[in-house]
Amino acid sequence: MSSALEAWKAQIEKPDEGFFAVFAAQVREPEGARDAVREAIKVLVPRIGWETYLPHVPHGLLGLAAVTRLRPLLKEASFHRVLATQLHAFAHEGRRLKAWEVSKGSGHWPNVEMALAKHLPTLAYGEMQGMEEPKDEDFRRIGAAIAHDMANMGHKAVMAHRMRELFTTLDHPKATGRRLLGISAWLAASEPEDRFWAKRAAARLGEGLVLPAEGSLLPDEALREVCDLGLVDLLNAFTARIKAGASQTGLLDTLVGAASEKLLDARRDLEGKTSWTLSYLASLASDHGSDALAWCQGAALVNLFPTDESEGRIQPAPVEASSEAKLVDSILDAEPALAMGHARAMDADAAFRALAEAASQNDPAFNHSHHVLAVVAAGDLAPRVGEATRKALLAAVAKSLANSQGSSDLGRRAIKAFGND
Image 1: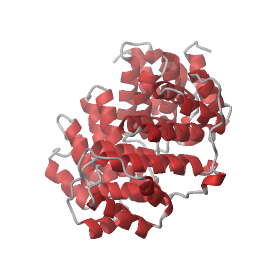
Image 2: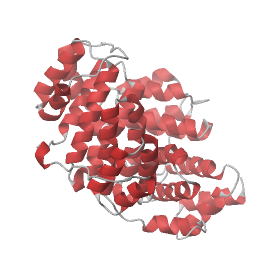
Image 3: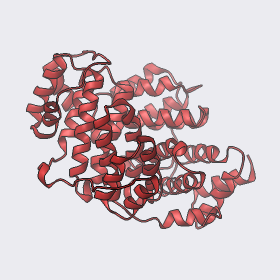
């Protein structure tokens, strides 16, 4: 282990004022950023007091998965800034007095499945530490086991999905992979469990219904049903559309459109929670696309948030000329209508680069990493939906970022440590 990585490990174990300078030195090493993230995961997963947050989940690790996905969209300095601040947030989450001392299991999948079914999170974690060579499929098996558990608005499924992505981004490291598998399995096995929506859907559809992958978009009335009906009426209408042959592409377009409308209507204090629906829909589309009950859960989650009258809803401001810089400036200046106008007028790829840059300039501890989570989820969803829904999604995310600006003090300190101020 290099001296830079040794110093970084010491910072992760006990952060102090030298955090960003030590991180900057580590990043200058070959594969420095990747190794910094790997080491942080190995050190912190056993030390964070995950159980003290239940039924919620601290977003340091989830946000870290999102940040690594933003790298292709960001300039090097911006990526280093947001990676540094996200690692800082991860390192400062509440810790237990002693690191987990969990007996290493055999990595035997029947033991894992038993732990998940009987809500034995410590056993689930320990079994994963005995996994000889973690694989992407292991994360998928965890996700499949809890696909119908919507505790804390579907965080269990999102965790399994994003931890698999992070494992892949980090080049499938064995020791780090065991930690990522472990915390995914630990959360999946933890109580509370919430299968209410899946049971209500199963009463209407039965178990095991497989949705066709491709098909026509649904009529506008389907979006209004998701936004406006009560839960019982929504499930009646949504399951009727599934029985009539709705496809994954049609359902996703409707749900993303409805989620975008809900995000436009979100109050400032609900921007982050409302944008979470995008994270769930991205995981749903990626991992559980053929599962009809999971789609009903997605509809119920979107429906959960309030819808305002369209007459009072914020509208995009007219813009004469748009650019990435103008979209970033309008977000950072907290001008949501102008940000919406620029986002709708721009090419989607350029808009996502601007959204990523704006998200990178907010300290994640301020907004619980909701900015980076929203941008990554929207980026996952955009290629899967129609042009009209994509424009609505871009505008909604731009509005949400502009309407929830926070501190960037840590980001400025990180940039200074890299000598880029």
